[in-house]
Length: 328
Image (cartoon, rainbow, N blue to C red):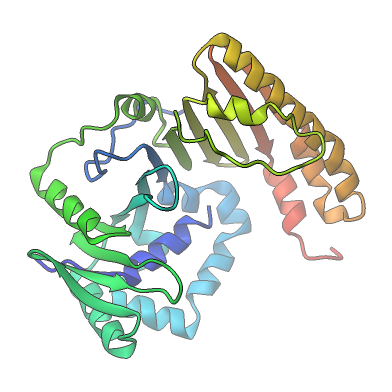
């Protein structure tokens, strides 16, 4: 089997970062590493097909991909990103930058032969940054940035590409693809994933217990000095973004008990009130940004038992106003 592709994966991730009645319940991706404690799932197909993207961003995306260099590159890959990429899943683990590990899984429709040839061509064109490497019997493609750690990528099959920050992560994903077994994840993480909605544009699930003990906060005016202590008690967090006619954001934070949740809720509410007071003044001089004041009005927080919930909404009309060329 031919397994390779950093270029194809790069295109997928670029699109992924551009940002119905739900059917709840998500299964963990079978390639997720068992040690991961955070997962991000981006529903690329849903985002591209959403009303708000079609109305305000799709043409710009098409134009960007229609440039001579981009068109030739995508033709070499045999890839139409707006049609062929379905979902991007990222699994991460580690407490800080020194031990951080990640695996990026891109699902869609790919041509392994074309991806392989494009990768080979890139190794010949820029051998200082691109190379073919092995981990045991597994071949993969290595990208070495100028001042950063290397990344490794490969094509698992016609529907999956993976990228990791070490060779072992790629090899483990290849082995998982052959086993067909579900990953045995951290129980708290598995519980969070099971509650997520795969029809959402993006969801994120994180187990944070013990990971924010040493977090550093800025000396911002009005910031509750007890926030650092509240963050240190945070057990889990989730983020759900829905891009349809409007854009909605939901954040959930779980604390060890109701008293801790009440304290976190108070600190979060203070932050939201500060934002509500600052944004109208910050946008007053720029009419194009005035819709942000309406977004801020939708900011809500509430405490339910051991959880703190935060939500906000950006309407399609408000986004359209913000994206209008100056003077219109």
